[in-house]
Image (tube, rainbow, N blue to C red; front, side):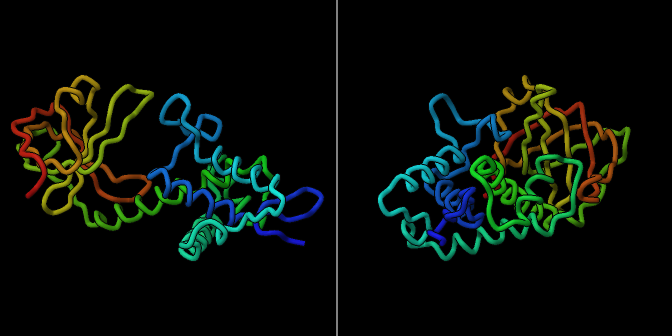
Length: 242
């Protein structure tokens, strides 16, 4: 006998699509995914419940109710969209090739099942931001697939380019800034924390830079050509394009 999310068997398994749909519901409600250290993510602050914790609370609350109903149809009128998106999350992992990443491989293995135990809810919930980041990465790579090298390594050059990404490298206490020119060629540079604070650049800002052309390199993950620069001097930050 099956009652929505909860399958009435000896091990009380949970249906994957309903767990993911609930995670999507919580993310929509909060405006973003909230992680915690136990699932490999960090929460936004003391006392903030993670998306995973909210999903677990929902499961426990419904399990104790007189007439449990775990289906997303019972609490979200937009259930069809979320169930469809939940299936896309599962398919994303089901068709993924095994990697050297233990977390990803665990998600792949779990996605090949229809249900999971409560102890694996953290993995199932964490599939959602991993999938969303994957979609964002794929869209970025598609937009810049024709990126070419710019400048001559070892020479200084002045460029007017736009900041499109900032990635904090916690282990190095620094940032990687990614820019693109009007031809969508990608230019990257390492930025110290002091410069990150001083520059106050925002995503979308168009900046006039003088920099040293360090090297040309093909990204080993995307096969996209990238130009690396250093000794950067900000001439003028003209802000976002009008």
